[in-house]
Image (cartoon, rainbow, N blue to C red):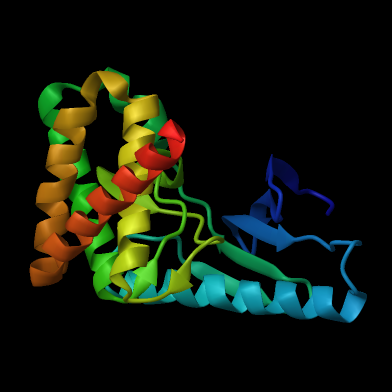
Length: 213
């Protein structure tokens, strides 16, 4: 832990910045022990989730989606050492962008989301808090809640989360941002995009029905 700085503390893992990991700035994602679980079960859960997340990051990059480079995976320590992406969270810059800049970045985000789904990756937490603009490109981070699936339902849940986040966080620009996102998503996923978008609408309607109840 010496020389490491705590960047964020989550329910499942801590993010630590190492300013000089083998000569580069690196981010360590470390899944801590859960004392309410049996020790052997806890080790196995943390080990499996670490493998899954590192695998999804690698697979996403292979599908043409910018993600941090994974430098090392420590299964015993349930830790992924990865590239520190120097940029700004999209969540924090939307209001300061021009209309054209917003359109470009959200079309690119939609394109990458379509590529993810096409590669069988469900992000699980598809929000602007988990996308960093670096070098003009959207870099997708935090696949901790992700899974491998090509199910239309799960794609729809991913998309619904993005739209709900836009509605609550970027409400002044929701329509224009999601229109640009959908345009990119259709290009990234192709023919299967419409089915996923239709399922997103169904999921949204289910949520409204439950809220009215």
